[in-house]
Amino acid sequence: MGKRYSSALGDDCDESISCSYYEGNGFLSPDGCETVDVTDEYVDCACDHYSNFGLLFNTCNSEDWTIYRIFSLALLAFFWITISSLMLLVTFSSHFRKRTGLETLVEKRARVLGDKSVYQRSSRYLQE
Picture 1 (cartoon, rainbow, N blue to C red):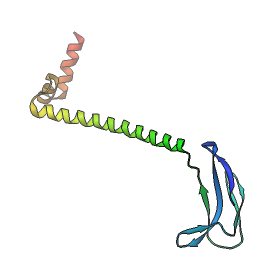
Picture 2: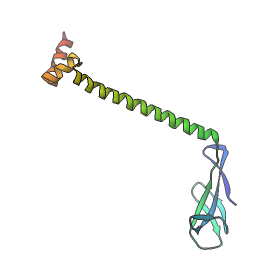
Picture 3: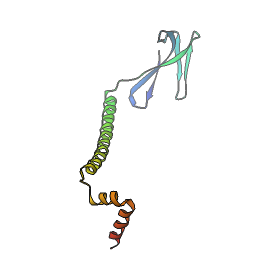
């Protein structure tokens, strides 16, 4: 019915490609179509009728690959949630310190005197 070829996942996971046509109502049927040749560039189909054609891909269900994908997505999600939470904590802590008066001396100088004076004073202390 369909030609088999080795996929990128390895030899134990083959995919089957079969030529099919559109029957209507959302259904594809391989009746009357034959898969002649499958290469990396094209799939050659021979059908005994004229209609809209397509390819059906039957993929394997490798549990190792699925577990690997789920684990990698969970790890990536955990990483981004952690980074986002830390950035949110930094933002809220700076607003909280400003509202409660728990600013550091440098932050108070920057607020009262402006940013330039803080940098000028800190550069003077560094030169001494």
